Length: 181
Image (cartoon, helix red, strand yellow):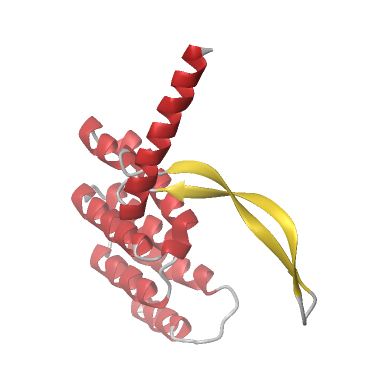
C-alpha cells in the first residue's frame, strides 16, 4: 500500500510540465523501482522519459541498467537505437561521441572482444576544421577572421566515408613526403 502511494505521488510529479530539476524526480522514481526489482516498471519509466527527452544520459542510463541486471543483448539493442537516433541528427555529434565512448567502456568491462571491436569501429575520428567568424552589430555583418573547431567524422556515415578516405590519402601523402625528404 505504501509502495502504491509512492508510485501515485511520483506519477503526479512526472506529469508536471514545469518543474525544477525533473531529472531528480525521475531518477528517484526509477531507483525506487530498481530497489523493488520491478524491472518492467523501470523499463516503462525509461520509455516514458525517452518520449519526453532523448538526452544522451537517459539512453546511457537505460543501457547501463540492462547491463547491470544481465540483459546484455537488450542493452546493446538500446545503444544501437540511441546511435541511430543521434546519427539521424547531425547537430548532435558530441552526444553521439559520448554515447559511443561510454558504450566502448561498457563493452571493455562487460562484453567480449568481438562486441568491443564492433563498437570501436563506430568511433569517429576527431579533426580540426576552420570556419569564418562573422560579427554582427545588428545592422551589418563583418568578417572577423577564422576560428578552429573540432569536428567528428564517423566511419558509418556516407559523408564520413568520403572524408575518411580523403584523410587516409592525405596521411599517406604526408608520410610519403617525409620519406622523400
